[in-house]
Length: 489
Image (tube, rainbow, N blue to C red):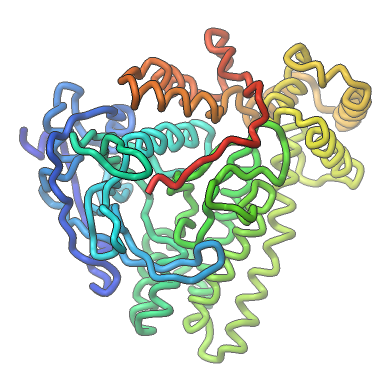
């Protein structure tokens, strides 16, 4: 099959930066590639004319066995603060094929995750398990359905080879689509290990690619810091809206483009608690649900530190300017969080009084004490349907609900307006942890994709009622405190 039929349109602008920023690296061929999942809808959005009967072409090109015409595969160098400790990193099992330009002139990275060893593998095998790649596929597509900026998944290709972790797994390669894979850690790498000219080239590149409005600013690097901060605030508010816990918010996992990516030990909160942690490696709760806003600001301070030489030649003045941006984070975040929480409760106004803020806090305090389900509680309030849990018949909740109704009525918000607002932000379905694990068990142990595909279909439209799958709304009967997620590397 000819590549011009499929219509790949590669550009490789990142590889025009200093070659200290990456290493040319071809994917390692796999034994027996076969297509497990292929995202036809996403392929169409990208202007790729694949068809489902092109299974052999898909398997070979997206496993790395065939080097796609026009691509220049590289592994990107970056550093990062992992759990607060700085270290040199880089793409240890991911290879960037290049940047595909869509028919409407959008630019997306095409990356193969699990494509073999690179010069940054640090002793690893460069491979990925089928289970972890299926998990990233379904979670990233669910995030897209939840209206949250995210990397996307185009395909999962089984390699026909075994991958050795704690157990023996089937191997796979994921094709990840992203606005770019440039991270806070990319800037940390340039600042720590490269020249100021190379740092400036990277900064200019990111401004041109992601934040062109910064070019005309009086201080473009400082304006870039502020622009990235605003994107990160918006992203974290989205996470808090749906109870998403990233699990490993290291600076190398923080996208400069403001997208969620690197779905390793991520999970979704069922019973509300800001202390919720599922990641097996986050033993001190650094990246707990309620800590995510603070950690995002901490990560942004690492970006600011990397940009200091470009913000001003005088370090003291550079710090002052950077701090003037970072110090605005708490108030901006609080305002956006309040607007989001207000929408979840049907208000949709721009300014909130102290009494309304207290109303929100009272609900969250009640949810934490009663271990109420985060998603279903907002749905119950939205629909006035309290049959799902006996918690909603308790006097404390009834008292709160009457206060909420009074506050809504005092704002003059009619039922239809309130309902429309709430339905736009409150998902009916989230990727319930126990369902995801069961679907992965069925797929990987028994080659049974029925539950996986059902979940995928429902999670692509998570705001739509679907009475066929009411069971997907039910949280686990047992306490989620014993549930653990793993990095998958």
